[in-house]
Image 1 (cartoon, one colour):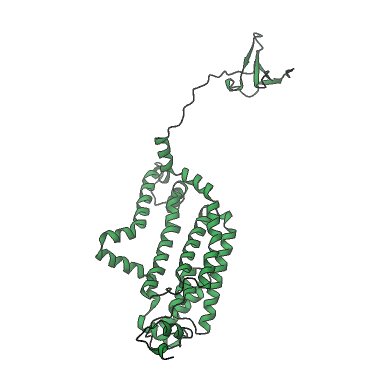
Image 2: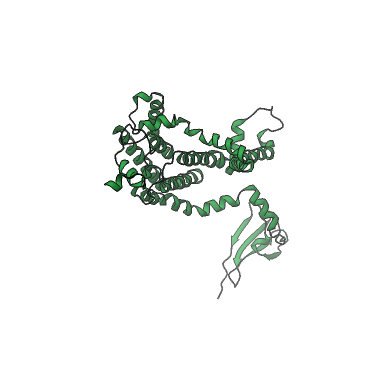
Length: 352
């Protein structure tokens, strides 16, 4: 017992015992108690992979998203329900409740978002655990603009690193401008009066350059969402507990169905990749198409009669009978380019 209370030796044992049932209001000498089942490393990684894989499935093959969608809903709904019960029992801090809302991102998170925002404004009526930590850290509704502040500071420290952080947004905007230039005649025909045509721009660029839509709708928002969570966990020292807890291992296995579904979509994704404009141009440049030798064909009209049969090797042939001259000539199928109305007669040939 003496060693347990001797904080000069180490605080790990004391903090572990303290966080088993933290008081609703204290001095917050040790910061927020960790909750790895909500924001642990495996939980976050599994959530990122699951959401990204599910976004790919919904974007490119929505008919294959049923199994992955059920696993996603199961994980998110169970997390939100558990968090809501913990809040009513005053056993969950505001930090982890807000992290749970941001991580889950489901429609049911609306209640927790409103609850967190309202309680941040009306701090004297909060029912979260460890309220003193909320006063020390201030309003955590700024968690959504933390990446913007982080980018601003990184630009001051290292310009190249700041450029690297915003490169996805810059490259997507540049790609969209190039797409507008390439498709300008389809978007703004010469006979029409110039107008913005925002709907036409969106549909045409999505039809010819679907990866731009994927970047705008899926990749950039997902990267920002991941940045919000990771920077928040670093600033507030959240999600650094035991990696092999039950909740974290469970989320890893829940992420398997979306990953398997994405792997099964590989033929579709590869076919889509081959249809990209720049890929087709590279293929035509590096792998020129074989030009077959032109085959001479003969055209016949209604004054000729085509009599089809097979030779002794079983290959089809056509005997062309000119009704005006009575001449008979044999052609192979690829040598004939006949028009509609030709009288084709079937003549059985014995192969005995």
